Length: 262
Image 1 (cartoon, rainbow, N blue to C red):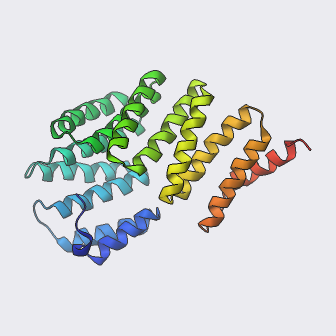
Image 2: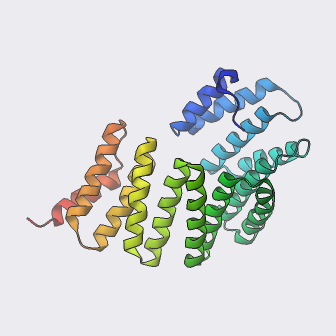
Image 3: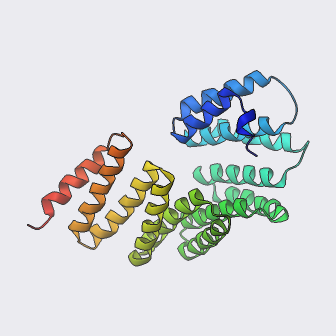
């Protein structure tokens, strides 16, 4: 539902650039200004797209009430021109808000309703997003085997569409579930895949987080050399993108150096 970039306004294009850089306040300002310039009106794909972006940003900023309001407005607009994929993804977003608010039953209800819409539409990419969130919900409820099954289904769907961002994210999620399960060998494979995908995407935050997952595995394995290699790669990622390395990573690197055998 993305508009043609050649037809997009400067505000919208700037908003998407800020969003890619994870500068959420600036992106939000651009999208809201664009929405204000549109004025009052009925359904349009661009209005819906703006509201989805605004809802997603509020969710990232933990402004759950405002995120929910944006998503509910999307659903109201979709009554005029139903788009099962858009409705399904909006229900997934509402489910995510409920899950993060500690309301698993409400989240599951949103996800199940979304599943109905997305299966009607046969929207492979959107179903993959839904399945990954079913996996996270199962993890929250301590159903690790069920969560792993959902995430594996999400990965298979993302493979069919070649959606690398989805693959990167879900490989990382699957690595965390395997880690929680105590299955470090499979977790290591997942984090390596996630690192590769995030690196290919140019996402330093995702790449660094996947490397931290690997470092934790090697730390439990009592292999300080491999921990050190991961931490140095994290430092390299931050330098490459001109980002400040978190103090926690610097302390971890220092601690690893201190325990490394001579």
